[in-house]
Image: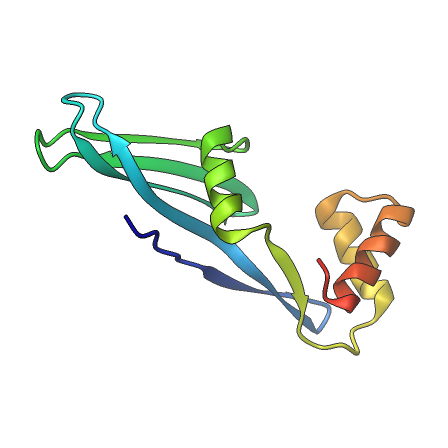
Length: 133
């Protein structure tokens, strides 16, 4: 069964600087056994940012018996879903759209949003500018 990739792009603006965080959400589809009748059915799982918080969901719909299961939550993505998403899509990356963006602005935003200390945020800014994060 083929996987389907759905990526959502969000624009983030701060102090007249514009960045793009790609992706903000990911989706994977994979075969799974129906909890009701054991028939092979399609399972769809995903995660995304909603109002700055991680949300995840897993949906299974059985074409044989009609059973539908939806499980969802916030914060910690279940391990099996996280592994499928990472295998399929890899980790999210922060892409700097304007290379002339001030390092001070980048550091202020990253410290506020990611809770990094000065040493961590300096290293993160260097990785973002190099295109490796």
